Length: 528
Image (cartoon, rainbow, N blue to C red):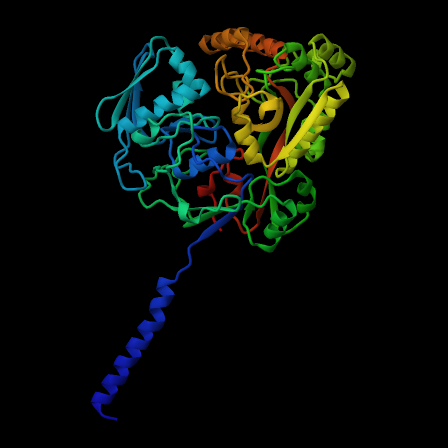
């Protein structure tokens, strides 16, 4: 063989090697996290609804100015530095340099101000801040200012609020859209981009890494710090059939079930390939529509409160004894910073005779009461059926109407009379962040005239909430809190159906589950 032949063979070998090597480099599979989401994603605007699936969506694609760390302390997130005057009336905030939305455009102070104004019109702390005279103004491209007419001690707590309506930063043009209907466009500066082209409502939502995301240098803690993910792709799968979801987890087809149906907690505890983790403290809510009879009458609401057994409700929802509180006297979280038993004594034990008496005194004459029953979320279905049973035991003429949870989420916003497509009662649950104070509790925080479904209105509660907010002396603040809850047990904005711990289930191959914070969707803490 001559030198030319050797050269040709060598060249051929190099080409062949390149042909085999190139696909191996080009076809590296995307690292994917697959999660069974607790509900179907339908509303893409987390500033329009308090539904947790939309809130979780918000944390995937948007970022916040401040965020709570694992100790519950507010920390700068998109903000680089801030300052306040000694009297607390003037604040200045500067954004971190280089922040961009997922289309590559810069995040500016004008975006932050427009987002703050949208949030301030809807959120309970934002509205309270507005009542203290809050005015936001962009100073330059990265700096914005807050002016107050009176001190407000929860400025940073509000900007770092984890749930309800978290203060997410939107582009100015989107933040200025009317808040009367949900936005359809999605453009954020968070860790992921929503893949609208792969979105299949009722089936799947897909997210991929945002190449323009600018992470903080601090490690992730709670909702604060870096949100840089180990995963290139995150898939939310909607599997309303619990058996299918659990089977998929056992087979390794999914990595995690975000909210494990409680009936499966005990069986999966013995599976060596699965780990179960408590996901924070939760409370069941029975929400009554106070625009229409019978629950526009305080005595009818008190009647239902007297008939409810918290332990029966949480047991019916399927939570094992070690994951539920037999009785919780506070409207806030038992074991939380604002736990109090003020005003609870008359309701400590169910009293059906008292419930029937109060219902009669309310003027109820046997009219149909429409109860919305979700079919696709097992624990909510059980909570709703227990509500139906409890109402019937009081002598209420119940019209139970079943539909999926996403549809109920849309229907509960209707103010129409029940016979015209509205409703009387629906049930829900809330994590500790949406329960644990007079200004964060989803149904104790709304003031008269708010848009919260159920439309509770009690001017005395409004006054007591404001007094609690303004009080700075700890002992007097506790007195204000007790007075607020005592009135809540009279006005009954909603009925506490009991406290429990939700559960996350995941494959043992999934790392970082112990770092996920109180059930919040911090997927950037996970790896496998």
